[in-house]
Length: 258
Length: 318
Image 1 (tube, chains in turn blue, orange):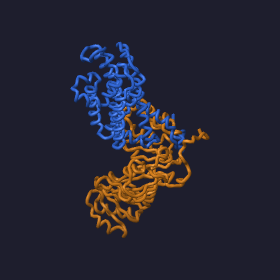
Image 2 (cartoon, chains in turn brown, cyan):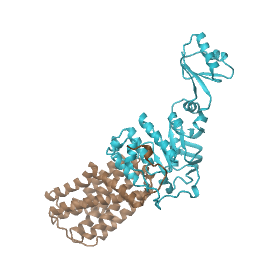
Image 3 (tube, helix red, strand yellow):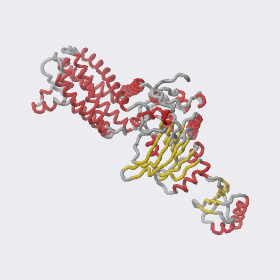
Image 4 (cartoon, chains in turn brown, cyan):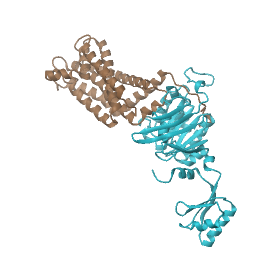
């Protein structure tokens, strides 16, 4: 039985080392994501169902080649978008609403430490998504063809761009508006970003615009280096870099913590 | 573990040594056209419990949130432990309990407290703290499923877990049942005994009276009175009784020694002030007997902090 006498309340303040704070907060965010049914639906179940469903059934004309070879890179891009953008925007929007961000501001965990923790959590969840999606794709007969090392910078820059956009939304809109908006953007980009439907099905004028979307850049870049046997995805990396710089710069200026 | 000290410990001593826990001078805070804090000046001593009392909208939370570094003042100066409230060096040294929220609704109580404890170099044991505050059985309960009082206690636990020098508690016992309120009071007393400075806001007069060394009454964003609970309530005693409404107090006063005062507030409740003693008591009861007035609940008592508070801040609802 704990009594007040056994508790040493004598002041002994001090911050924990940064890595311990960041890992503790990242762990909390990872647990929150993996325990949240809606988040799992968005980040795991929908991508896997789309991958398996569209690989098995000839619903979409993906051009020459096996459907899974076309779909797997697009689903990886979708996974990045679902976690870094949609999931993060919704979670952060509600953290802001519930005063969680404000409360954390009163602890030794700095704002940059909190952002670092969020990044660690997003990358950890994405790593889990990549393992599951790649395993399912391989089981469905995917034979990667290309230069998979280039997938790493693409995934990381895609994560940075989508995180910037997600935080921009979460830091400015009301939590409910973020919830609706982030899901809407997810659906629209899923349809228009070349994830399931090749962009060359669109008229040329429209296609050139769509190619500048972050999801299209990530999808086409991954498709180049994972399925089409291509090398350095310069164009895709440049588009993602522009989105990253623009989104993070705007988010830093506009983010409201409460 | 005494003797083991981390270099990460924040500075103790140095320039801020001996500075008051909180020093506020001429603080102004406006929200649009509303002035929430209007030239407020107060000092909270180190190692003491200071209670900030005031009606809703008096500026209590604005003031405390400025001290916590959440809001910036529009005027005046605020020093907390001798530092600017925005100074990051203060974060490990302060423990704060916001009025509501701050915890993710789905987070489990025990896990969340453990995460918060990992932000500090020498935290208290989260399980011990949960046990002390009667939350041991709820360690795995998500925050949103805790009762209001349990949520308050979890928030209180998080405020003290980092072994801070100064704790801000914004209405710590609002919504607590009597047992939980006493547990909270015990913790505040233990903090004080351990040398921690405590600044709390409250609506509850008994809380301020029982817990604090110093009471500051604020209204309309200014300090209207401050002092020890005893100095505010004064040594003056009152005679109180209930009777039918509308007694002729002029007539009663004529029978009392000069310098006495009588009032009916609220209707049917009478308060006599002056040289309250056996003589006055006898005069009042004799007068009531001749008037055929039955008195109930006749008693002599000291003014309470609540009386002082209502005198200072008025009776109208806000």
